[in-house]
Image (cartoon, rainbow, N blue to C red; front, side):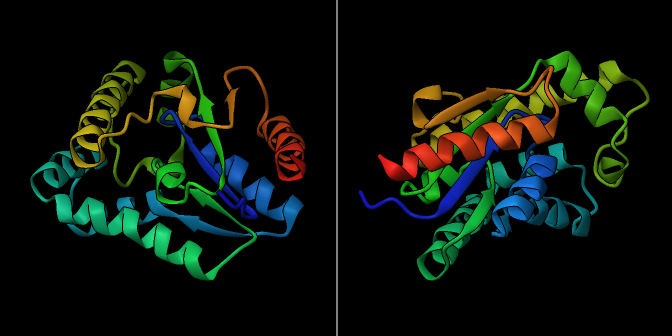
Length: 186
């Protein structure tokens, strides 16, 4: 398979994909394609939380397929970009595939205090946030397996796995760039 100048960034909820992708595009002078942002916008338009929208999409798989197909279509005509998407690695297999892991307690705290999430994630406590994140993770895994016969939590799908629990997004991005350059040269 021909390698492309594309980094697909997947990962756990609140693992730092958004912040890391911002740093990557700045350092590499790449573009960005974000499926998750589109998913959140659709949830907001339907006046649903992201979890409610995940449940809705289970009964409307065409939405999911259209979202994933859009990343593959974008990659056909573009290069030098980062895909910030749960299944970017699947949609664009010729990309450098990265998965960001994070401890669930750290993730719940990050998400709870993230003002950008308040439109589609409204919780009174960090524990409620955590419970919702665990539910979403399970829903997504089941849906992706049913639709595509893939497991996003199978780390063998990725070229690089980084635990972001105790490191800054800048350090995560530097590690990705270092490994990405090696991958391109192989």
